[in-house]
Length: 610
Image: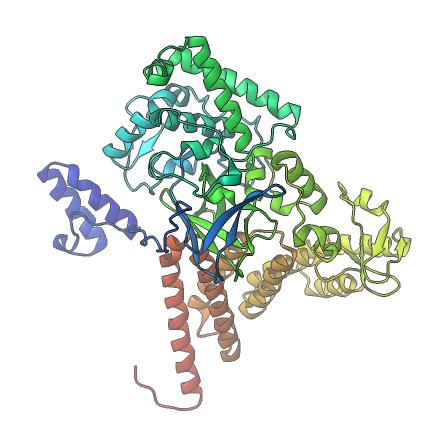
């Protein structure tokens, strides 16, 4: 509420003096402060400064600690020129272009490209030119759908790209295809650079990137026409035909292209063919060369992708399902950091999972390794051989394994199955003793009983049922089986309803550790889960700290401190601009610790002065 009132006070600056004094007086009464205590130019959302790094003279937007190299087998890739420490900044790069992606108003739903209820619910919170969070906004004069933080951003966006896409935005046709939209933005930017491009000989490449005209390096980003499936080529050909027809009929784009010295003698048909070919080229390149821009929706506590970007330097990093980097955005500037120590000459990786999720409409990070490798091969032309894909102990089959009836090792089905019925018909193999067999009937019957008992516990909240579930689960499953996620979630609901914060946080601790071990959610999602536990526990302890047992209160505060430190570490890597949101919760924990100390002193008869 206070934040909203402060922003409202800032907006009164554009009113007449009598109206300004009237509204500011009302706002100050609600805030219980004097009018002079609110500066007229107050800003409540200052972003932290960009981190610094030693610039690389031969690799634009990269740190001096990284370099690029080219081999016939790997193509262009990024490596460490010297030892890199966890947290070191590797790239600071402004995207060549970005495009908003379609987002469901209910973001729990899967991406359905045929659904008509798709809206830009999150994108509308950000300036469509500089990607700054909007406190107040100015809409486009024509379509009024794209919002900007000031007139300067609106005018720059209009000159650079929006004047040609405005009609499509107004007609709700712009999001027919995300890659098509970003390709369109790329050619709009390329027009301002004269479409200057030529094929680069990577064998002799000494410098990568240009501060003045980076389109040539976008033009030469990785692509593989031969491995792309025919259905994608048809889709992109149709996308190119659609946009070329639109640009001809509804805009003056081709007139602007015609004014370039190198295109004056070209006919309109030749120009349309050239631009259509560029759209197809860029659509194919974007299969592996997009980087997602994600935000945390603070209302729903969800990690949401709001845009896809193309950053020619950072996209040289190849894929690994277990990457050693992460990235975040400060407005429209991308920062890439190392998430682990990287030794000299080791390759530096990023993950394509978000890229594939955007193209295919699935969350690839949650997929079985067989399906994940198939999607990476089909969409990104990558035959992944990272640790997560070749180590049988890290596969989804091993994580979902039963206990071997002979040696109690991981008895896994290494094939991808659609449901439990199909799983029961598949042969299982023990990763320890190599015993192969179908699941015995006795084990299946025990699992059927367990499933029914879990359902009964969710209805009755009888803790005895939960204990029986745990005993049965321990007798048939490995400790990473998804049963334990269901079990701990049920315990969380039970203890939260009962008001037992000690057990609530303990079961939450177990669930978080399980999610990390299974890698079923990305790091940010796990941090959001951890943050949710903190909010629930703090809300309860603030009201009932005096009634809570001393030992339990101290135990809860220790776990909360560990949780908040973990969330702080994740935000520092992915969303440093949100670190300030944790300060009130850290203060709350500190206040509860003081109360805990006073209660201990009073219980021992020690006189205290506060």
